[in-house]
Picture (cartoon, rainbow, N blue to C red):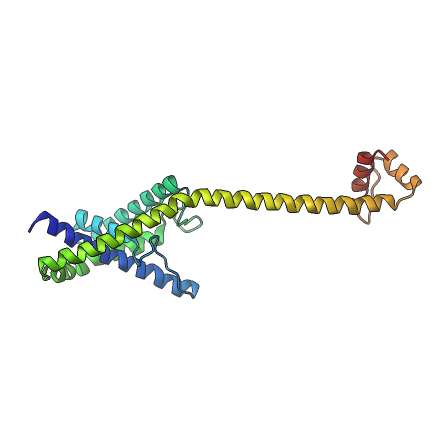
Amino acid sequence: MTMLLICAQWFLYWTAYSFVGWAWETMLSVVLRKRFEDRGMLNGPICPIYGFGALLVLALLHDVRNPVALFLASGVVACTLEYVSSWAIEKLYHVRFWDYTGKPFNINGRVYLNGFLAFGLGAATIVLVVQPRMADIVESWPDIMVGIAAAVLFVATAVDWAITQAGLHSFDSRLARVSEQIKMRKLEQIEAIDTRIDIANEVLARSLSWQQRRLVRIFPRLTSPRDPDVVSRIRRILERRGW
């Protein structure tokens, strides 16, 4: 078996497990959020981290046959990959696609206990049950069929990856622009509200007689039980206007 054929087979495995990961994430969204959501980072129906996690477990733990040891080791491998992926994505694109802060036994919000249990069980199932059958199916295909399938899927994934990368690289700058626009809108609204409040307060201050305004000025601790803030607001207006 040539190295090229082996790479083609493993790419098919990666694609299959990435699709299973996408289906799992999408199913969880339907169950928990009661609506369909495309949960993949790419545009196509794959979650690459699941594919990489599966291949990593297969490469490192394929000889482990004790279910408990395989479960624990798979959980460690999968969570390590998830942690590193979360950190790398945040460093590269300045965003977090998942955050488990507040979840039980989380580590910096990047991994947590439920993920360890789910990934450990899933990866152990792949090693002991799924992969032997999948390998039998793929190895039964003619070499040319494996090559063509892998090539088509690779090109489609590469194009999808390139489009996604372009979007992610501009995502942070666009978020920054949107954030700045939101801040500007808030400031404009606050200034408009402050202006209306000042006008209303000035009308209020003008409604007081000269004698009443003088009392406010000369008694700095004067307050009103009806509204403790009203006198201080009037006093500020009087000081600003020089009345």
